[in-house]
Amino acid sequence: MGHAEFKLRDHPKASPLSLDEYWMPFTPNRDFKSDPKIAVRAEGMFYWNDRGEKIIDASSGMFCVAAGHSRKEIAEAVHQQLLELDYVAPFLRAHPKSFEFASRIAELTPGDLNRIFFANSGSEAVDTAMKVALAYHNARGQAGRTMFVSRERAYHGVNFGGVALSGIISNRRKFGPGVPGVVHMRHTHLKENFFTWGEGAHGKELAEDLTRFINLYGAENIAACFVEPIAGSTGCIVPPQGYLKRLREICDQHGILLVFDEVITGFGRTGEPFAAQSFGVTPDLMTMAKALTNAAQPMGAVAVSERVHDTIVSAAPENAIELFHGYTCSAHPAACAAGLATLDIYKKEGLFERGKALAPYFQEAIMSLKDARNVTDIRGYGMFAAVDVASDGVPGRRGYVFQKKLFDNGLNLKTTGDSALLAPPLIAERAHIDTMRDILRRTLDEL
Ligand code: PLP
Image 1 (cartoon, rainbow, N blue to C red):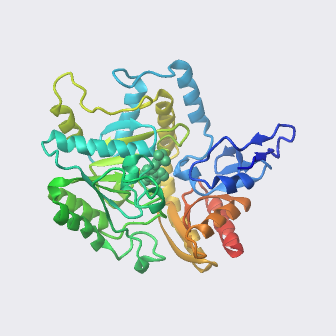
Image 2 (image 1 turned 120 degrees about the vertical axis):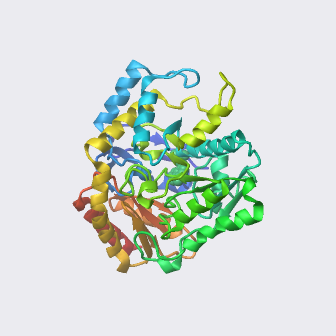
Image 3 (image 1 turned 90 degrees about the horizontal axis):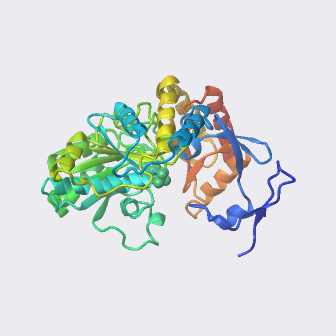
């Protein structure tokens, strides 16, 4: 493999960076290194590249920086925390901010999802939720419930549990059999709902796939049903009307836990703290990450219902560990400090309400691209949307070119396959949305 290097254009005197050693995740490394897209600075709604050009951030990094980039309050909280208490083991020891942060998250979660287990990423949160589900059934004498129901096109991170739940073939196909006993319902991206904003009128009946698995495998073998309330990484697939409620009913009838993976949809993306509240359906477990700390520190978490938590905890003998699970950096002090500062910003600036108020304008702007060249579908909910471009015959190739051209034209977003995903920071103004729409239209024309 050849050698690649890069000279930062705003630092002409700096020695060139070798690009060889850093193996980039989820990136065609060879192509990237022949045409690197580098950000050297970020603030508010924008990145700056190494030529000093401003790039508007249309997907909050990767759905993370809801409060905008490089927030001083968060940086200072982390700095202060690292000077005061850099680390304490989370097993058998604790620090005050871990409790404080858990209480603050519990103020935002729906129902009785008031017990918070900390991890370091969305992937770890998902695997944690799978283990909690298994431990719960074990504790209530139903250890036979080991199967999981997930969905085609699901993304639940990249650890082995999450990959088993995954419904995206590229994320599974090279990694062997993984965790057994996972079955997948059909996805809900239906032609009949194309160009619909919000919950589509078609597809509620797809929730009956869960019933079919119950009839096929027996409810007594199924631990949990995992869904992203809005399937995010696969391209913002909004649930059909009544679909999530129906899943809730089926789970209730059969003693199956319902898990919402809110790694993307959490923290105001849908106009409420969580999508669970937007859709009026309360799961038993809920995973979160990304905007939990505005991505200023890596962190994930699982909100667990008191019932599930208490069942596990009270089944263990006195003085015994109740759940043999956790990470060296669970509830890391710097991450808790970042998270508390983030929640303070959300509250002080009313960002969830702000996102909700801006959503209709965002919807109109993005839906106005309906007649733009190469667009095959647009959908969205709250401050989250997908614009699909026509495939050039090789799935994902057009989408990949699209995001590169967009970056060069001054707009950063995440694509997945041939879908461009928009999830602006919740600090966005109308003028920012206009800029996004205009750059999108121009770039669609160039495709
Ligand atoms: N779950 C969902 C729904 C996600 O969208 C993601 C990441 O995009 C994850 C889990 C994994 O999170 P992480 O990349 O932090 O491990």
